[in-house]
Length: 433
Image (cartoon, rainbow, N blue to C red; front, top):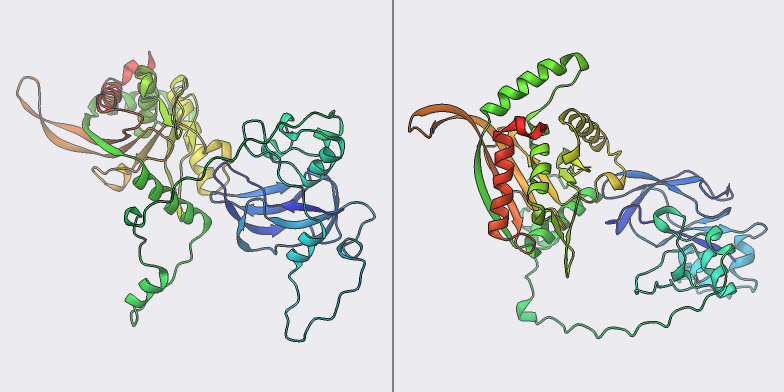
């Protein structure tokens, strides 16, 4: 029986992707681990490995096709000795009327070899397994929900089930009662559609810009964030004179090693330490609960062509300023080349968005779910300030805004977190203690 090769989920947030390139053709023999295609996700172009061995019998989705849903069939894999002609149908087909279109290849293959229904784990979550692994499990009476997969992203493959013994599958859980339909009066009004907007600009010159996967994802996630997260904002000014002086001293000492610390490196360290100093704020929203994390995993927004990445610096509180600087430079470079792996931009509890290098003095950033907060950082500007003795002097002042998810962090807790960030940046030597 032929096996369907399915569109993989190459990142936790991926729902669809573009099949950028096939690296095999129909008739090629592949084995588990072979790179067979390049797939463009919402963040990067990644290689897709075969999980079973066999012959590529049919390519169902051509290269360059956009919007291919995760788990949609993209090709057919044949076992040794099989052919598409043998497996499709042995009986001759009746002649179709002249005007009737020929059936689509996807429909023909699906009808010839339907895959078994996707199994469920004990907690009701879907178990991802290759079609061949599902068939072997069905033949041997094996519960796939009790097996840990060794394939990409935990997918169960042939090798995982060939040595397993039969187990009784758990009884399916009762289907939950359908949620009541939302009343029409409370539905959010949809914005004007493309046709309506285009009509508004009839007769005016414009260029239509097609949205790639990244831009679509950015639009969807920011809309979700502003509609579902109860943002509130806390603002502070931070005096940077001590930090600028200390940074200059460190950079002179590190010059021989080719290290040059940026103000942003100090901001990352200050935020990571603040999450340890105020551990109740080191949390994310998880739908019906909060998750309070132990490590300080800080995400930093990096602008790229057509969107942005938020690579995550894990355990940032434990790393030296020079280590953070080197890691941030590497992540930013690979982010701009779209060569980050999913584990490098997924996670974190807190994010930093710095527009100071563009001369922006202050702004409000949108929280990146499921994070509990994001710090918007403006430029350091020389301003007149009044000292504790009442004297006016000139100081370098940086304005920051902490956007906070009120479900995770209350006002007083957010103020405590921001105070810790301010204290760390205004007393930079203490961050090395």
